[in-house]
Length: 608
Image (cartoon, rainbow, N blue to C red; front, side):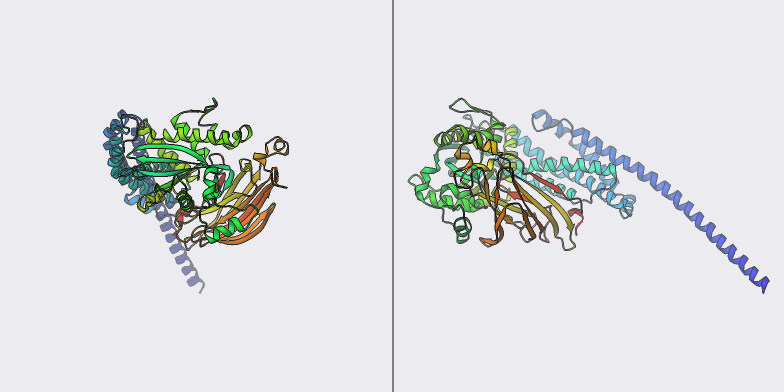
């Protein structure tokens, strides 16, 4: 038995020995193959990188600023396309496709593949159309001999620009949907490319939107009349601020006329803007400051469509408006005028004051209230608006058109500028381009709306600074996302400075001098919800309201000099959302929305 057992042991040992050596040999073979494949992948990765660098190098130093650059880009385009096509072919080879399924590394491979696809699509689909449209605009006279806007080249370039922009936006959207890279070098390249591509998409989108809406808005086919409603955000209303004056802009085949602005006092005798039952209850019946809905308060509505409808109701009663059809409205504030002056050049007031692209907003939102009477304030605002808007489309070239298009886009995004047309076709284009301010309405592109209306009759909102933090908590299996939002308002006025300011700024209401008293409306994203609402600081009279069919969280926030209030709440977006949560809010007296984002907990790009 002992011999039998010993023999069996030796045989088993021999078999395990053979198995061990077989496994070792397999590991050697795998390692060898991995080494070969690894070397091949390393070589191909360097080739992809080289093709990409050559494509980028071919585009360096080129811009739409001069005809030579456009000609050079046209000559280099076949070479650029060759490089992007080669990079795409390598990155989608069999080895890369296999490696895209590997743990950890796979996501980065998918991202590199997506980057080469986006680059190739842009160079072959978007750039040729964009180049054709821009070349056409560059070589065409955009102004008439008298300096007015020539609409024909804009109309001719629309189709090419729209086609190019659709291709570009599609490629950039696909790029943004790629998995977030983990490997340092890939992430660095990805982040740089993302910044450049989104900037390109933003510029192309702004120019395309301008080409799409401006011809009709500026009187292609028929003359039009618009009310220019000048807002002061130093006395906040949901969509901007108190309406200080209203001008009239006429357009006829590119010719723009600006008639004298009328102070709000000239409109007040013609009554209110026909508020809805909800608007009457929230803004008038619920105080402490009761909105009268006359011309001064028409920006109290979060939606520009309601402001326009209210403006038309009053316009039709006036002696100067009842015989003239009002085709739409423009809402604008001093921040928009300041940016416009930055493009058009300085404005010199009749008192000798020179306003520039950096000092206009502060002058019109604060300084003017310290130094001048209300009558003088109206005159100076009128002078700035007339000069800057009249020059907006004067002596236009491609560079100025691009700058104006970008300005309109960024200012509309920050609610410093908004447009509305009563022509449904034109308004659909304005809305699609983002030029018409609206409370949260798009489930695919979620936003939280925070709109404030000053309850202390004053110009205190120049001193009320608003900041917010949006932190993503999760990307959910059903496609929704959850966020935590902190929204803070701070009265930056000091007691010592408040004592030196005129009553026109700090107010005369008992117990409210130097205070901000903000009626605050908070909207959930369309198709989403807000939960766990809380507040710190002097927030009171909180209530759940309904504004024209939409649920709203409403409250009053009282801010002594130096004091702050903070609203904290959780947000769940619609299951249809495809972009990160944004903040839509009443504009402040400067560019920038004060929003800080922390989206690192998960990536919307990875949700199903």
